[in-house]
View (cartoon, helix red, strand yellow):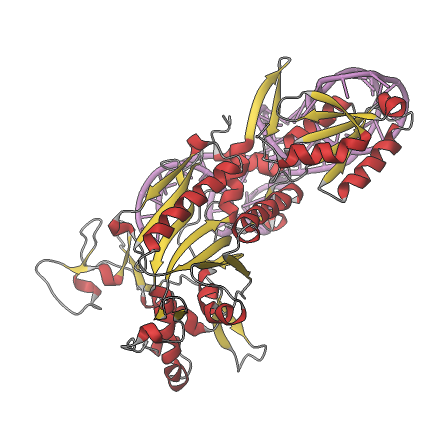
Amino acid sequence: MAKITKLDDIVSLCKRRGFIFQSSEIYGGLASCYDYGPLGSELKRNVRQAWWKSMVQMRDDIVGLDSSILMHPMVWKSSGHADKFADYIVECKKCNARSRVDHLEDAPDKSSTPDDLTTKVCPNCSEVGNFTEPMPFRLMFETKMGANADDTMTLFLRPETAQGIFANFKNVLDSTRVKIPFGIAQIGKSFRNEVTTKAFTFRTREFEQAELEFFCEPGTDEYWYNTWKETRFNWYINLGIKKENLRLREHDKDELAHYAKGCVDVEYKFPFGSGDWQELEGVANRTDYDLRQHQRGIRSMSQWYEKGRDLTKVELVEEAPDYHKGPLSYFDEQQKKRYIPYVIEPSAGIDRSTLAFLVDAYDEEEVNGKTRNLLRFHPELAPIKVAVFPLVKKDGMPEAAQAIAKSLKKHFACFYDEKGAVGRRYRRQDEAGTPLCVTVDGDYKENGTVTVRHRDTMEQESVSGDQLLNYLRDKLENWGNK
RNA sequence: GCGGGUGUAGCUUAGUGGUAAAGCCCCAGCCUUCCAAGCUGGUCAUGCGGGUUCGAUUCCCGCCACCCGCUCCA
C-alpha cells in the first residue's frame, strides 16, 4: 500500500523527482496548469502509448484519428456545447451562493418575467431579489482566427475530442473498409473553463483525453456497453493498478448527461478530496444522439451564413423525417439496411490516469533499518526500463558498461550512471521506478557475465552478456506472469 | 466564487525588525568489488509588488500560487 496520504506529499514527490511541475513557476505559477518534467513526460507518453496499443494497435476493429483542436463553430452548436453560452449565473449577495438564472424561481407571493431578478428567491438562503448582475458562463475557451483584427472569426478550443471523431465519421467510412461494429480512437488536448479546478493535475482547464467512439448497430449497444466497461476496467488492472483501489460506478438516471442512455465511471481511490473515489474514465452509451445532431447541423448551414456567422442566432433546423438515411448514416451490406449507428464512448483522462499510476506505484519499505522509497511501475509505464552501471569506476568497467548501455538504448529507454556507490545508484533508480538494473563487475572481463538487479525484490542474478538483451526483453514483456 | 490555512535552498525543517541555520539531496575530487558508506571542498532560499522603518524574511496592504472545506461542474 502506498504510504502517501496527503495531496501535498504527492505534489512534493512529483516535483522532487521531476515528474510534474507547476506551470510558469518562475513567474509565480499559473492556476490549474502543470508541466511534465523529464520523468513525467516519459511516464505520460507511456500511458498514452499503452492506451493506443491496446485500443488501436492490438485490434482489427478500431482505427486511429488525430483531428484538429480548432473546429468549425457549428460543430459546437450541433453538439450542444455552444448553447452553454445561453447560461447566465448570478450570485446571492447575502450568502454568495451561485445559481443559474434559468433555475431561479419566483418568491411564492410574487411573479414576473423570467428575466426579472427582483422577484427571484435564492435557493440557498431564501433571500429575495438580492443578486449580482448576471454573468455569462463560458464553458469553452475562445480564440480568434485570422491575424487581421478586422477580419477574424471567433473559434473555440475543443472541450472534448469526441466531436472531432463524429465530424470525421463519414471520412473514415469512405476511406477505409471498416464495417460496423468498429471504433475510431483519438488522443489529444481538450480545454474547459471549469468553474473550479482542484486537486493538482486531477481537474485542470487544459487536459488530455483518450477517447474511443465505438459505432454499433442499435440493439447491440447494451452488449458493447458492458463489453467496454469490462475492457476498460481491466486495462488499468493489467497495467498494475491495485484492484482494491479501482471500481466501477454506474450513474444514476438523474446523473446522466442529456445525450447518454447509460454511463459508468471507472474510479480510483485517490488519497485526497472528499469521498476519495474519483473518476478516471467514463464509459457512456451516447446512442445515436451526436450523429443525428450533426445531420441537423449540416442542414442548418444556410442559417450560419444568413445570420452573419453569429452562433447565438443560429437555431438548428428540425430533424428530417428520414434522418436514418442521412449523410451520417451507415449502410449495412449484409442486412441491406441503413441506419444511424449507436455509439459507446470510453473516455479516459490521460493526466488523471498518469496521476493514478504514479500514486498507486508509490511505496516505502524498511531495508536494514532505513526507508527505501520506490515506484513500482509496470515496465510498460516505467520512464526508464533499464539502468546500466559499472560496479566501480575502474578496470575498464565504465567503458564496458557504456557499450552495453549504448546497445540497449536501441531497444528501450536505458540510463547509464557511474556516480557514487552502486547501492546509491540502485536506490536512485528505485525512486524513478526503473524495473531492472544491470551492473558490470569483474566477472564480465573473466567470463562475460553481468549482474541484473530487480527493483521489486532487490534480488540479483548473473546473466551472460550475450543473453542480456533477450533476458531483459523477456522480463520486461512478461512482467507478473513468471 | 466563498470561508479557513500555507508560502524560508531541489526536499524536510529552524530562526530573526540588524551578516538567514541545519539535515538530506545535488556537484567536484579522493576512496570504494553489490544496496542511500566515508573524507574534503562546493552550489543553491525568505513567492511577487507596494507601504511603514535608518534597516523588513519578520509588521501592514495588495497580488499570485497551493492545500482543506463549501459552491460549481460531468
